[in-house]
Length: 413
Image (cartoon, rainbow, N blue to C red; front, side):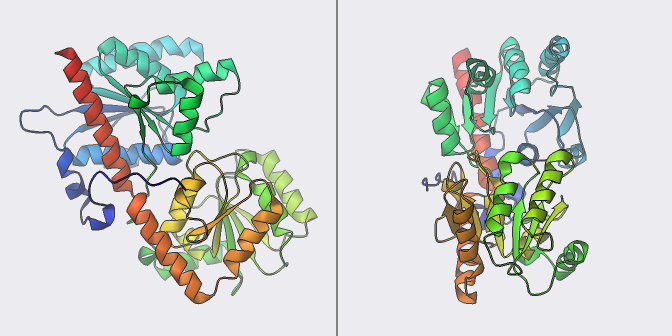
């Protein structure tokens, strides 16, 4: 496991108020109120969207102005409730006929609103934002969240905008190392900022019994049977099929498996998974239940949480959410998992793409006695609170903003 970054200040567990957390970032005497514009495709769901709202909230709490440009979505209301401003533009579109209009709109918006820094978290918006920021001579920061796969020259060119920022944020050391290998840019511009979880939301003590009962009834969970959970949208690389093959190696009736996540976007893949479940004789024991609006309660119902991704996760938010809820994690031993799971202490890292290895990891988690499970739970919660809090992520991001702004100001003198 890579050593965690040092905190920029005290950890979130030392804090009592989100507003107090960011007092250090308030504009200094004589400074203006900085304006930051975040760019992303849409505000629908996912880690990028959640991080955008978290950072926007921190900016507002710090007395900065937070603008977000996207194609909209159900999370816009949450963003605006945090005090940020949302501007609707189709910056998600890969249609070249829209690029010029979007670029012109961004240039005008940055000038009109007095934007000091543009932060892009996705490639198409980043290409627009990079050029628009250059036109207005304002700072430009990127965050690389994607799987760092660049197998062709065209793909490398498409991705290359993400290393053109005054500062480049990688969400894990794994991503950072891959970016440096693929793009050979200056390490002085690179910062590693792991994703963070809201510790007040993902807190096992804050989930009342009523929420557990609601999900138990909704999913018709059997009494007294250990729950194996794979959180993640239905997509091939998340490893749903691999988990089915692993569960087929365990004793039938010794577990009940829930696959929790968006399951409507790829109906043909879902149908193939259901057929695979039936062929393995696992229909009574494995259920694809779709997404839920209460992941903390879902995690609390689980006896073990699985991340079976076939390709390395850039970071893997599921792994820190599960640990924040005190749940054992069994994850493929590659990518971001090596930085968030402490092997044999907060979970198990198993050989990737190997059903037998995954089955053995699950078996190890399910056979923990009560004392060992309690020790693991306490250690996992402390691990996340120490290294992967929302506050740390936001504070480190704002420190990067301040650094980029000060560098830009010094260059203008």
